[in-house]
Length: 419
Ligand SMILES: Cc1cc2nc3c(=O)[nH]c(=O)nc-3n(C[C@H](O)[C@H](O)[C@H](O)COP(=O)(O)O)c2cc1C
Image 1: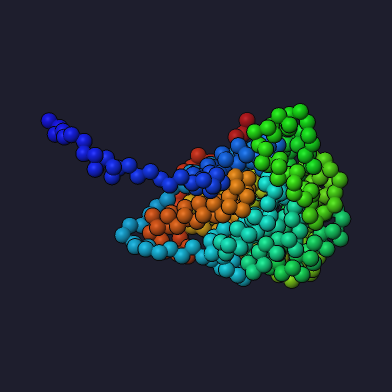
Image 2 (image 1 turned 120 degrees about the vertical axis):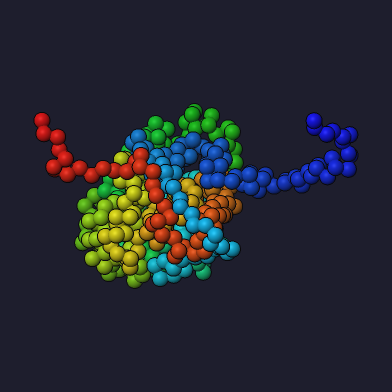
């Protein structure tokens, strides 16, 4: 028999703890986002379809991106028990300097398209969090503008080598003069990948007003207000004619770049240099031997060659091949701090976030990027604590196994079926 009593008003009053209402709509919205996926949902609601799809989308069937995210979800962690980690140290030394967290902001083109604060929000949030910010060659804020937003923190510059080499060399010199300490030389864009969502949306730069875009704009007035009342959206460092993003990329990129270009850039650039877009062991070894300071295992967030290798799967074999002393970074598919912890456990020195940052930006400008970093930070710290490690250096491959659904099977000639 359950014992019952007359409800006691004093107990009832005790239960009624109404939260103080939050009148700042942006803060309310961002506080309610607990994951990067939550930020993505808010971003989608607030951003015109063409701009959201340009960010969220990838190439062709978007298999590379789906698989990269799946590979992280297929991580199985192996915690140690009764190893107290009352405080965790998430800081790392990367490319000759500190970072408070094991990730930095990846270079993204056209960032002010997503939300008008663009790179200034990214660089400011990176400065506040003590992590590096990377400005893209196709950025919409100038090198000097980023420096002003992150004057004392670490700025990195991402270089595309253009058909007109002088443009690239000049940008390299400007970034060096502004005190950027690392150059990411991107090598996975001999031509633009086929971003089918952009084609279907008729997405072009600058954005064109069609009946469709106007209808789509109605529930997103703030984006349009920002767009129309802030300086014109254009590449800050390049002057190009308009077109689809693919056309602009194809006009600017040179499909013939080679190791000779690397040697020239090496001569111009005084700081650290890393190659972004490495996708196999042989290239990793060759680049190490060519004397670069590091590599980024990346398939450009699935925006170039669809069905490209999953960087997270490549990581252990690349680390084994290049040894412990060569800097290996990784990106593509990171949506959770636990993804970053898994990457570090399998040998990554550092990671980069692209869309996770942009979802935050679209969800709430600078405050949204701060929220992205906060979410990832708390996920990293919690995962480390639950694994029983107090510092990133304690993470080991044995902390991670991967469920095997997506693991590639290498075929040799002797495996061939003889018919
Ligand atoms: C909208 C967008 C624009 C990008 N622009 C550039 C770029 O200009 N240069 C570059 O090297 N990579 C660019 N990338 C690739 C990112 O630097 C990074 O490799 C990728 O976003 C990582 O995958 P993730 O988005 O899953 O984190 C871009 C990615 C996105 C999503």
